[in-house]
Amino acid sequence: MDDITSSTIDDAVAAMTDVELDRAIRALTLRQRSLLLGGDLDTAWAVTEDLERCLAARCGMPRT
Image 1 (spheres, rainbow, N blue to C red):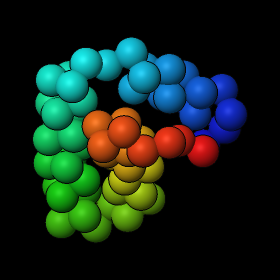
Image 2: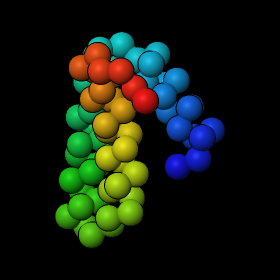
Image 3: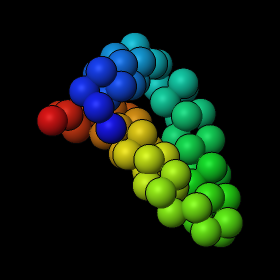
Image 4: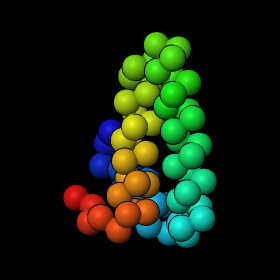
């Protein structure tokens, strides 16, 4: 993922409320599962990166 996309995602995640983060986490988890079951590993990995950002924000973990 390039730096511009990464910073845009980080900005969006930082602006989310806890409820929005919870919804995003649920949606990304379902999307990830669907992609994995369908064998689309490259896209599943990209979704996993977004999911990790949301989980870190929700848990209050510092982002690198």
